[in-house]
Length: 197
Image (cartoon, rainbow, N blue to C red; front, side):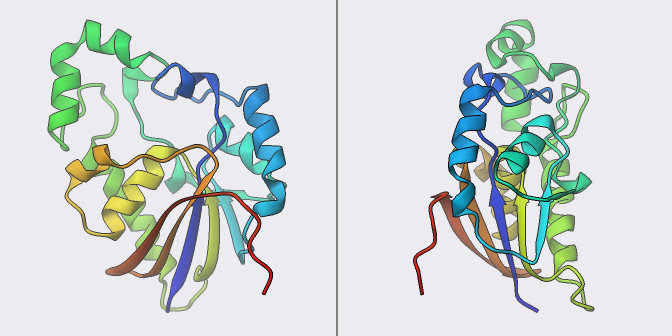
């Protein structure tokens, strides 16, 4: 069964502007306004989901989505680095940051490694192609950028290091279509109304 998964990255917030490891920061006023302005551009889907973070919840609400919480779409678990700025952690733990960036199995922060993140998101993607079709069709989710990057890496069977080469801008849609083992990718389309048929 072919599945179309559309992942929307949440709107901007202070943590993103400050290059912080997420730490579950909410949207700021600017992010709320931008998400509200994009509400008319949401593609139709049979199932709406969101990550459990405050940022994903507020974005889904501002977009007018009644999205169920999907634990598999939670942000990358950064352990003791959560909420800290990258510059602060780099100054305090330069060897740890270097290992984290170079070795996909490293988790010097005590959270998930890159490999664990990609596996978690990949397991969720594979489950969407269930034999009974219960989760198939068109799925739209609001997910943190790291989750969207991990989905692209896993779906296209890219080497884990490719994760660091992918950018996901706020309020863009990344689409995966296909099924387990054979996915196609459409990257980072800004939320805009779909053309009339």
